[in-house]
Length: 495
Image (cartoon, rainbow, N blue to C red; front, side, top):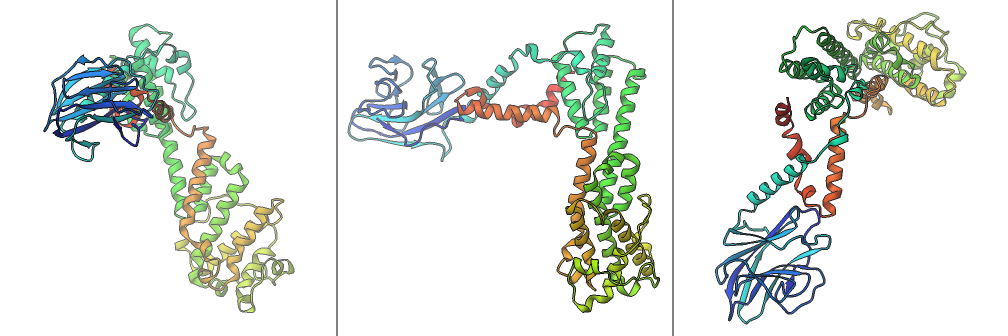
């Protein structure tokens, strides 16, 4: 008996291989089947405990004993015999020339490794094995498809029992929205039938999970259509005050989504002050994060430098005593710059020696592209003075260092050709926009993922773990293929 070098993989729902009988030899004493690892035998598969085989000389199958059971036709030269194991059924099957011969052997112990094996006893016997490198004679794909359907039937037949939430639990508002799921289900079921059940149905559970996923990912138009369709199929008047309240909430959330994306778009495009103005108006709690606000304001200063750089900042410094002040000792301690940069350093000193200013409201800068050079440079310097006033004496060393690093752009006549020109890269605005988006979502107490995504990830992990333990049902099921792709169909049926 000859075993393969490698056992059948653990994450396998159905395993199959074929053997072509190139020559039956002298007597055709050939056996094809499966065996336990470590089994050493000079006998045909199926004659020893821990082995199972289908013999060609008499068509019998043997399962760990010397006496066999009549099973199928004999096979000989020119025949192709297949052997497979269905890990869900825990049964072995054989094929001959593409014809399925049926399952045999009950409750195979699949907890231990199994190996494909063949056995030959007389001279001249010649076999050629195929483990899938060439197309099989038997349509194994059709068999696997049927096995997957059977596996899904097992899943669908499972009793959910106490896993389904009650209406009371569903009345808890999703942390990413203020839509009352219990109210929607009551509109769909309880109000339409006049009965308010303690337990919700599987259809209602599916509806709520999908709806919360749509809301979490801000597909408000789709969510609205789903609600109207689910409720409308039960003949409920679309003018119901409760339904109107739900739809109004969806509209409000859609407006919030638009505001959030508009803010992030302004930041990505470098229009930071405009975004700060919108944050102050719509999400003021985000501005309580000093570190985030500091990063945004420093980025706005950098955008001002980027806009003014082409207008020769040094040559456009306003000629007034409040701005063009001598370089202070404190500033010269902050960075070392050669004498050729002294003209530009006037701009830096105009910032660091400025008197304390009164903070102005965000969103007042306007369009930088429409400013004349002198006015743009004045705005730049005044914005820098405000930054220095607000953060120059910050107890946070990281903020003070960040401020120095930002102001160092003015230490060069041409910041774009300076060693710190990377600060001017406009792509740096995008990760900052993402930080703001995350901060906004944190204020809304939104979960990192929806219930549906969480369920899918947990189910995938569970199926993976079970399949490594040779659970045939788990190995045959794919969340993406068998669940997500059929979700819309199942939802329509439940509605």
